[in-house]
Length: 148
Image 1 (cartoon, helix red, strand yellow):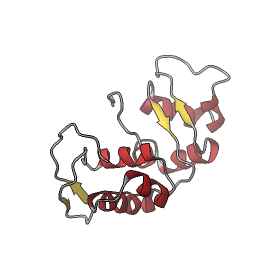
Image 2 (cartoon, one colour):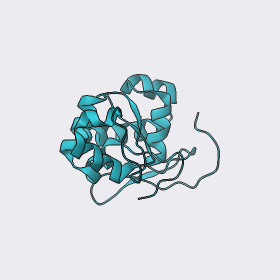
Image 3 (tube, one colour):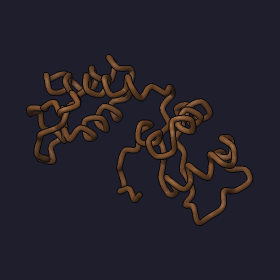
Image 4 (cartoon, helix red, strand yellow):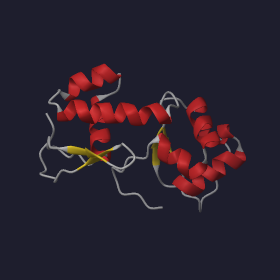
């Protein structure tokens, strides 16, 4: 899969690509780290940190995410993350400040912006609807303005 600069690769996506066991191993081994994954056409250097996962897991991660930067969360909570993300979007749509949302959820302001982009909220406070699975879907046009 090819990613564009600035694409957000969260732990749920990683778990879907390489399996929950390897995703948990990434979080347990590198909590809170940002890892650059070398492209698969190059062998991993003998001292590459990714080998801390074990050779097989390292190769699997490299095959799926080679050439990408992965931001590993401090904790592995994929099921509660969706609820948290939806609460963040709802708080933003209700007019709460990004700073307050970040403090309430104990995440960075940058992560709040990333979550809003994941749900298609790109700077406009507008209606957000629920999809058939009960999740939120953004129904906003991009105006190029920054959220406040």
